[in-house]
Length: 302
Image 1 (cartoon, helix red, strand yellow):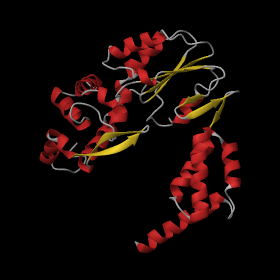
Image 2: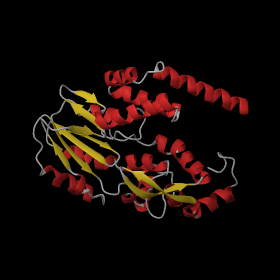
Image 3: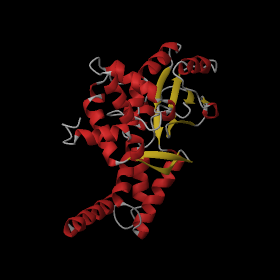
Image 4: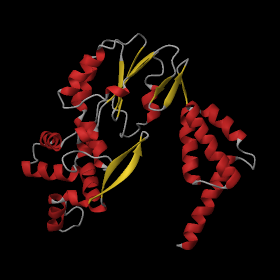
C-alpha cells in the first residue's frame, strides 16, 4: 500500500494504528432526522480508496437484490423491479452501518483472500472502521456493507415463498408480490437477520396493496406498472425552477442534474413542468447558459 501510494511505510503504519484520530464528526440530516456522521480525513480516505480499488474490486459482487452503491444501481432501478406487483411489504434494518462491527469486517477480510495474514486483515479492519463499526460518511462503508451482506441477502431470498420479489437498497428492504404478503413472513426475515446480529426497525414496517399509494425508495408506483415522481418531488422541482427563472437563485448544475434524474423516472411530467416554468425562454437552455458562464468565469479567474 505504501509503495503503491508513494507514501512512507512508517507514516502509513501510523495512520493505520491510530485511524480513529483522523475523522471529523458533524451533524447530517438523513431521512428527516439529524445524526452524527463521522467522515475520514483525506489521508484515511486515500487508504480506503486503495482498499476499494485493489481488494474489494476483486471481491465477489453482491447479490442482484442489492440495488444501492453498485455500478448501474439507483433508486429508480430498485423501484422498477417492483412496479408490476400489487402488494408491497417494506422493512428497515435498524442502525445498518453501525450494526456491521469491526469483527464482522475482520472475518470478511480473512475469508476473502487466503494470502492475507491476521495482521493484514487487522490493518484493513482498522482502515475500514471507526470505533468498532462501519460509519456513515466513509467511502468504504457502502462497498463493505454490500459484500458482508451477501450471505444475509441469499438466506433471505431462500426463505421467501414463491412469487415474492426482494430488493435491498442499503437498509431499506422491499418485498413485492402479485398476491397478498402474509405478515408472518417478517418473523422469518428477522430470524435470518438475528443470526448476523442485525435487527429490524419495526416502526418503519409498512404494507400496501391495491388501491393504496405505493412508494419504493421515494419513487411512486402507479397503476399499469408506471413510475411517478410523486407530488413532493414535483413540487420541489417546480420550486427550484421558479426560483432560478424568476430570481436567478440556485446552483444551475445541481438543478440540471435534478431535472435529468426526474426525467429518468417520469419524463412526461418533467416536460410539462419545464414548459410551464419557461417564461423567460427554455429553462434547460437557461441553465446550460448559466453553467457555461460559470465555467468561463472559473477559467478566467484561474
